[in-house]
Amino acid sequence: MAEKVVVGMSGGVDSSVAALLLKRAGYDVAGLFMKNWEDDDDDEHCSTRQDLIDAAAAADVIGIDLEAVNFAAAYRERVFASFLAEYSAGRTPNPDVLCNAEIKFKAFLDHAMKIGGKRIATGHYAQVRERDGKVALLRGADAGKDQSYFLHRLNQAQLAHVLFPVGHLRKSEVRRIALEAGLPNHAKKDSTGICFIGERPFREFLNRYLPRKPGPMVTPQGRTVGEHIGLAFYTIGQRKGIGLGGAKDGAGEPWYVAEKRMATNELVVVQGHDHPLLMRRSLEGLDASWVLDQPAAGTAHAAKTRYRQADTACTLSRIDDRHIRVDFRDPQRAVTPGQSVVLYDAEVCLGGAVIAS
Image (cartoon, rainbow, N blue to C red; front, top):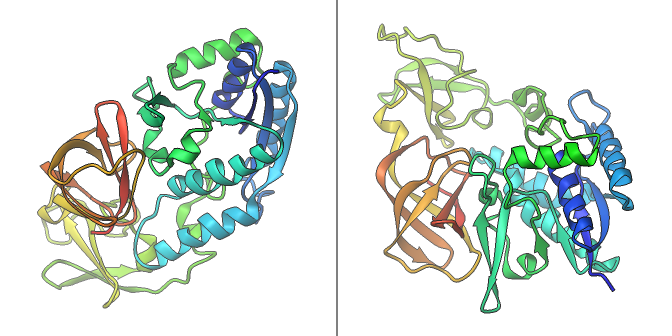
């Protein structure tokens, strides 16, 4: 009897091709569409209904059944509550990291096991490699689409049941396969972020859930140069939307957010893209999570502090319980509390931590 694999189908081309490839490989494939948000899913900015239609159309062409499951309550409890708490504390969280760990590879995995699935699969651009009874997480073959950064909190129990069928392919190859197979979503535009924000203005969305608490914008020397609308609405390194022109001090350079002082409700702003207060040679990370074994202190690695950032050389200089310190060879710009620092050895994703400072 063929092994049953449940594929998380989002309506996009990547997950559809993942299901197609598994079907061609002889697996017993079932599709599952996850509904993770329902507060305003009839809003013009959220495409849930169209995504379900697209997933169903692709499943029909592939010749598999598709089930729609509502994980909205779990998402609100496990992901969105943390999202709001982090912003309220002045940090800038990455909800996609938490969604993968708590929903796509936990709630989804649990459901798949209940309906007889032996494994789950998604359209993520990442790879897994089994060796000596353990599973390593590797970057996707398409460097421009690699999503291992978002998957770094997955553990061995999760990875042992996961397949990434498109991880060894380039995006152009995925679209070609979809076109040749007649999948109706072969040219569908990639999604741009989490559904509950979608294409809407981010401040408009956040203002529904967090109160505005205006305060002063100040220079590092303490001079007030403007007023902010609430520290939660800004992120380190931000330029657009600050509301300051470039000539306040006559220097003509743009202003950037450099620090949030929660105790005094002050937003510290500086002029110049590479101002010293925007550059960091080290960071402290909390809640560290390792895919395989915990690396040793003093070891050299590559790191990313943002998804689209190029690798940067670093040393994991301290590990204390789940608290780490990372020292960079070159100064890094706009290291942001709440985001994730993710460590790599070549193609292997080791894990990471939430940036604390």
